[in-house]
Image (cartoon, rainbow, N blue to C red; front, side, top):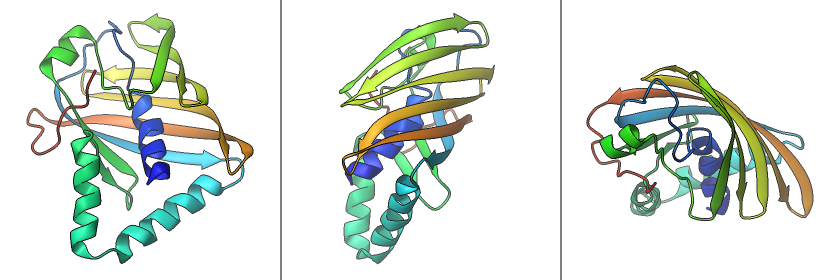
Amino acid sequence: MKAATFLVSAAVLLGAVSNVHAQPELEPGLWKYSFDIESQSGQIEAAMEQMKKMLESLPAEQRQMVEQQMASRGIGLDLESYTAQTCITPEQAKAGELPQPSDDCTQEVLEQSKDGYKVRFTCEGTTGEGEIRLLSDKAYEGKVTINTTMNGQSEQIIASQSGTWVSADCGSVKPMSP
């Protein structure tokens, strides 16, 4: 499940910059993130396929337990369509604070404008840079380059993502901590 957490963190990281006061302010509520991940070696894509097969083969109770564990971290994940959901609170939206994917991550805003920003991040030995473009208060798109090590080998991953607002009600998806 470490691979799942890493992939979701990488996907959510595109929208995970704290204290950014770019305009427009994002709408609070439930957000859906669609992501596409491409790695140099193909290991990430293979891991995603393996993870899908593993989850499909789990008994219903165990699969539900895994899904609940992810939800308790503020992540609703669909490996079939490569989407995740998270909740942005009104306080986070007003303050320009978006969810952090992990307590082990640090981030730095390199450039900021009314239309978006560029960031640099480090998460448990993984580094990268990304660019987020705000399309409106209910949509954004971005791309991040991630440098990491997998199976003892250096790996570069390109993750593209789009985020769209779903509703004001987050339902069962809990907010991630800022």
